[in-house]
Length: 123
Image (cartoon, rainbow, N blue to C red; front, side):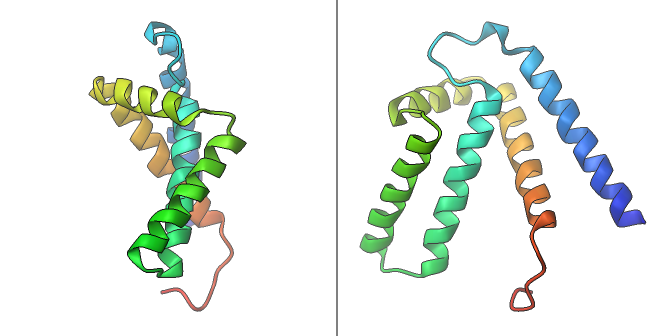
């Protein structure tokens, strides 16, 4: 029961942060991804990088595969890598907003991990 309560608390906090974050998007310049878009793209980039790490490839091969997977993430998200970089740079110049993005990203990844089926080969 406690685990279920913790789950709902995390969902509530994530939604509250997301609502608050999207309500303040009015100051964002044109051509910059919204916070929600940044979270989604960053989540997919992170998962792509984790897939590469799981493969335990040599460094040069891993770099190539990561580049291919990241390009695919941008293609599926319909985001140009230059737009993502410009957006990332913008949010790095606005640390409070970047903190909100990273908080939402961590919450999203934790929720995804909690929903993942249990695998006995993982600690």
